[in-house]
Length: 128
Image 1 (spheres, rainbow, N blue to C red):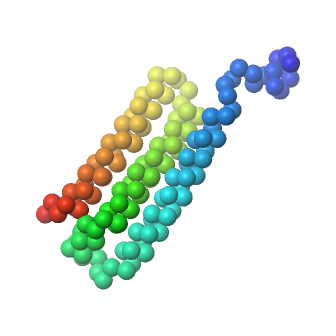
Image 2 (tube, rainbow, N blue to C red):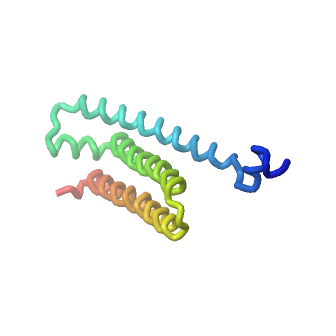
Image 3 (cartoon, rainbow, N blue to C red):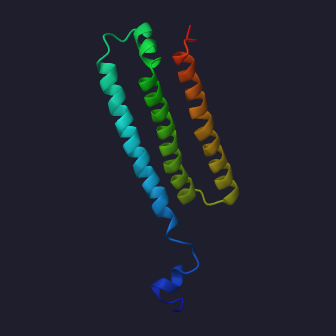
């Protein structure tokens, strides 16, 4: 197949198999986000009131705390996957692409770390 055919023009441009894994991860994190958000919305609606004390007492329970942590982790991971695709598709200069992906990774790890720290702090009663 030469350069004049469709297959000849795309040969050597990389594997087309890697995107399936990325696509599946986006779908799985979206499903995880949906399930945890539904659980949290129903749980919050079942609370007697939305006062600070009631909500922090609710968050201190193991199941809501774990659900919130899972939501935070899944949401940041989902956002990172989607934004990575945007950067890879629309940032063409290699230095800018590297900087954008590095900043994205920093935010994708620092954000959930801070959120988990805050949730654990509330769950352990250090929320005054």
